[in-house]
Image 1: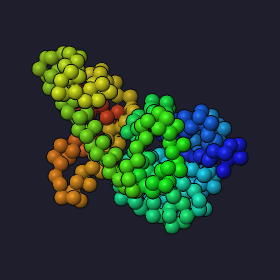
Image 2: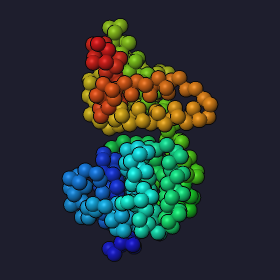
Image 3: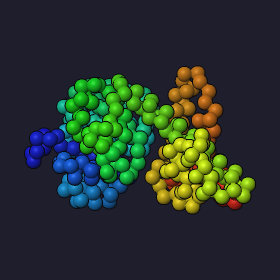
Image 4: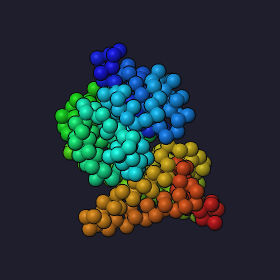
Length: 304
């Protein structure tokens, strides 16, 4: 436990847009952030100084430094790498530790990690996030959690600080179930985003005012949250990244793979995945998902 508080000590692995802001939020709420780690050492050293934490060059050092370790990495491969069975790993000396895994992963990976952690006397909880950078910083993330109910109950005081005092905190079920729900959330979101880009792109080709279209969409059956979050960015070509096209491609791919394992065909999800994969191929993968409009608006890079 932390020597400065009865609260558990916390560490973070993965200090990108989300992880760093979650760490800042918990630090401001009085939690002792004892260690941070990222493959970009410069980023990790800077955040460690900001939060009065230690930069750990090793994963095992992160585990040794904290009671609860949040991981916020990019994909299945990165997640498996930090929990490797050999070499430097978060599982080294992990008895009694708890890992909160926040990345959007294939649900089977969450199940795999829970089993690996339990074998060394540790615990895991998946805390899938359905929000973006401002919410991470403000502590208003929508968190969908999966794993042992007793683990979730024990971690609620910490998770509450990240989810609007618990108002946006949801326990889904055993390991893997929150990952399934997150895959569905992002699948539908990505389909809506691609559909909005096509509607605005076609409207622009017809000579219609795209700002007028956004007003109409918002008041009719075309409404969805992405009309508010992405519409103006599509029109203005402002694709500063909150949720990258590369992540959209990955997440839609997770949903399509889940469907295939259950014998389902999802044509809309598949077409959306293909569009985002095309963005990656065009070098647009690190732009925001709203940049899918570059594939549909007349005269833009992906339509010429």
